[in-house]
Image 1 (cartoon, rainbow, N blue to C red):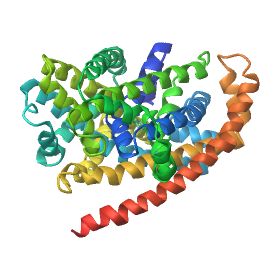
Image 2 (cartoon, rainbow, N blue to C red):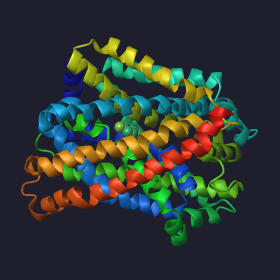
Image 3 (cartoon, helix red, strand yellow):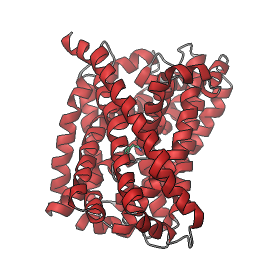
Image 4 (tube, protein in one colour):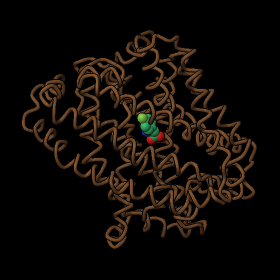
Length: 456
Ligand code: PFF
């Protein structure tokens, strides 16, 4: 239980817990995945649906995970077994599998971020920011940077360094906000950027009406991904909490930070992309990298900003990667008594291998394996994990959940019942619909894009 004990101490303060949860939530999901999804799923129509999912589903779902974690004080697998009995430990097994898949491509993209950090130091991307992205997105160098990112993640988790994570997030959150606000102000001054705001902020309800089949699962998946829900991270983190914390208030703060940073990213990326004449949908997973590298190449002291931005972005990605790896490692260390550094290295090695095809396979410059892993993990697996935990808690153990929530709040009153009933019926129903749509969408992706690509 060495790992658990190490981390448990660090959550002694409210700030420690909130910062760790914010550190996990804020990451590639906000700065890379969010603008990429907005661009792919119809702009403001997606934004609207995403905000709806964050409030209506993210908030109640986070509370469910927090009550499970704090009630049991156990790792995610152990927590579900304690509440639901032995069968439910398989849901914990699902969490472990999701952690493996997400971290394998998360680390490749984390490697891109590190690469852009070095590119800011050398000015490597100033000549042509689009060509630079294509060059670094796949290939042996990509593999090398994936290995470096994974090694950093493993190094931190192996040491169990609470101070490292806490210090990093204390520095990261204010710096990211300061740099992003600065960039958003810069974006306002760009000629030709106005169209970007329109695209990002004025929902076109026709798009929503015609594209809802892909917008709904994408928005649900993004809500789970960005809030680190559906795979036990928030269960694990809340298991180190004391009973006097107000879980509802903490959820609000964490979600507020996470959503604020995502929205701010859009206010930077879309005006810049439109001002550069690139439009939104074109660059796919490269959107944020192409937009920012282009901007940093042009403005005065841009490369200094680039170093700061990609430095902070690397820390944000790392503090999320750590939480993904920690769910798997804490399980193996707890349940099998394995030595932490050994367990971390073996698991890290396995995750690295799973990421090899992501780093190497290119469909004419497009890193297509990212889609293969990402849609499966975010839209199907995280949502499934989320639904299962919500069924367990809201339908079978609502009394315990309400009792747990009331600690640190006093009486939860009618709002408590609203929460349980919201989860019991509308939330689970919407998520089931979204899951069905996600299966259809994934089938289409496989048959229209991936299988033809594999067949050449
Ligand atoms: N929330 C992280 C991000 O937005 O980058 C990614 C993530 C971390 C997803 C942990 C899921 C998770 F369990």
